[in-house]
Length: 188
Image (cartoon, rainbow, N blue to C red; front, side, top):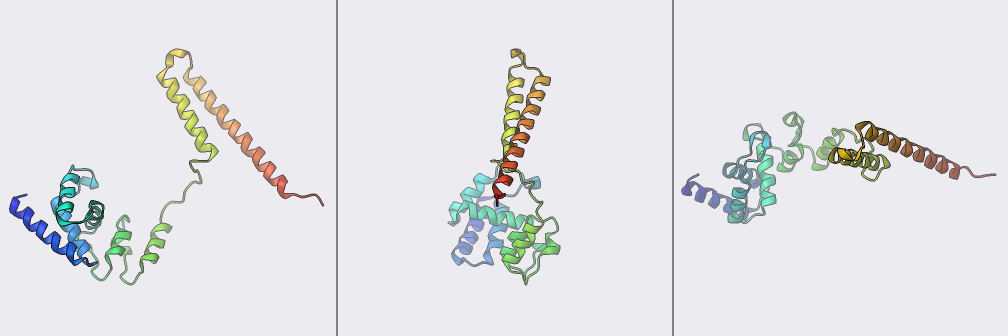
């Protein structure tokens, strides 16, 4: 990019930041894309340094400008719905069929609910669950086995330990469920 082009983009960016209107977000995002394009598949291109410099020049937080850039990348000008707010575009930007989903009359809350309802349901495994801990421990055992094959622990032994660990957790869960069930049953 030439110095003159940079100066022009910086000047326009400053105008938009000082205007501080909702409709300027797309234009700021488009300028950010021009200065620091997204990589193939939105991968890293090393342009964050340039984006950071641009954000500083125009007086906006880089995190904010990066969000504007990502929304603009997800919604090229030809598929933007001009009657829909920028916020709706932001909410739908991760949806593969976003152009068919967005409707100008929707509220942000309605749009968020729709997007959340389309997310795959979690399996119910949380980091504090015993299964998570068992898997983590098993992985640690497998890593130790892999790192120190010389201490005599075979792959079969590591698999056996993993199975014992799983059995132990299953037994503990059954006992906990039984105790919980018993605590609800009160003698007459």
